[in-house]
Length: 267
Image (cartoon, rainbow, N blue to C red; front, side, top):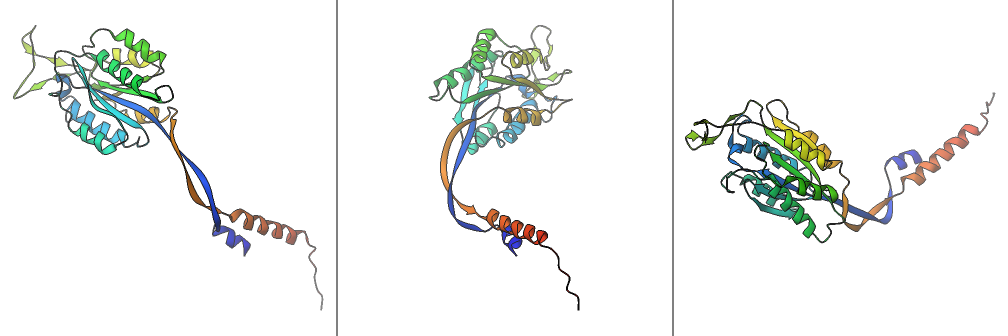
């Protein structure tokens, strides 16, 4: 009977329990240069990025996420926020017309993320990461200094290369972008070399969305393994489960029963 009572999980009274909310600060730095319209990744590089990032952020509801967009310049598209609906809305609206397109300056995006992290009141106590998404072409200058700063502050960059080695033309209206040097259609290709170097320098990792690899699940696992910081804690009242006492009593009685000598009555 006591075993049955224990299995029912009786709760008597209540107890206070501390619930801790751990989280990280994560910036998505997304390349919006014209090459992101290439269709070597279906339906296009940018559309695939939007789809994958919308799924990714759902895994980090306890973390603050922000969005930086860049090409030749970098802009804050969405400041750090816990609001998943706002993040999803901004991801939906991404297109290559949001930024000037005169080349690609990844250093400006990384430097902007660094500055925003530094401006946070709890910047010394919060785990931080940057997810850098690009095809790796036309990196721009001034990359080593910002990588040094990120490394010193323990801000990891997880690079995501998007595209294919074979490459593709870049759509522009009803035509394609032309290479002014050859007067032929420009071909954009995934160049992972610099993306891998950035990840290595900041103790991050490199992943791909390409014609031969889809490594967003691995990226999610890598971000989840980062040690979060206690962002908040609260005390909640929980019912106090007392099943242990009934289970202990049942075990004692069972043990006593086994130890008592078995008597046989003869008639």
